[in-house]
Image (cartoon, rainbow, N blue to C red):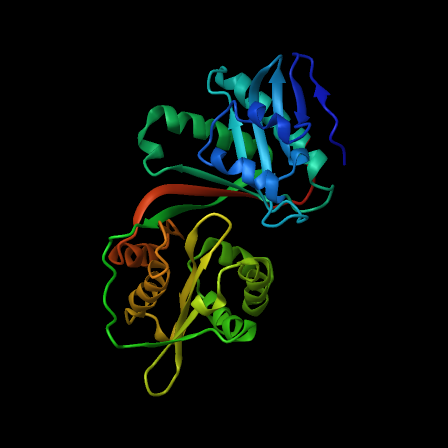
Length: 329
């Protein structure tokens, strides 16, 4: 692995940032998460060696960055990748591909899985010609590097003042007791899931139990918010589990991190009761917003969020590289 700069024949220099002091250089291109960069660097969720730019003179032609969820962690996602929209499309795509492959070869060890690419987009991105053209050029660069789109998602938001449906009395709620309590419910929920990431985990050969354990350990265990917020929904009297909800605070927002109904209780409308309970818990903390996301194809979940007062404010798309390796040459 190396972080040295690369000078190409057309005078384009590809290199990582020299340090946090070059953040202003990185920010000469724009993306919706720019406001998080300074804190990410300060907390170790980003490091300058993961933040690359393509330069011609002092002009930033393209940039990208990986992210992790805690200081010292491996890069978990490529979540910045921007191309100068003023460049001709062919030149823009060519420079973007060279930057992507050069930076990946330096940051991702040869033979290791390439972290997936995540991009937030306007909710109407397909309807705005300029936005659609810029994003489709970017997606073309990713596909030229061997990536494929995994899923498009709705990004949802609940704001204070939005009514939360009153409890119907059909379910009782109790806090999640421990790791095993939640994992034992997550595993059956993954069977028949409409979530593309869950489907990909199972398609890779993982069992539902293994996928649940991995998600718990890599995501839920990292939350600093109280685990007492996490709730199991159960039938009154018998205590039979129906589902669960994980309201939490991630590094940036309060969120409905995960919600599910066990297969034997699906189709009865319980998802509305469970989502409303999770929303009430976070709303009771006087939070400025609650964020959530669901796959575009998961229509039942999207409708449940809408019934509970969540509005779509953005979309997101994830690309994955199925073949491990540093780069495709």
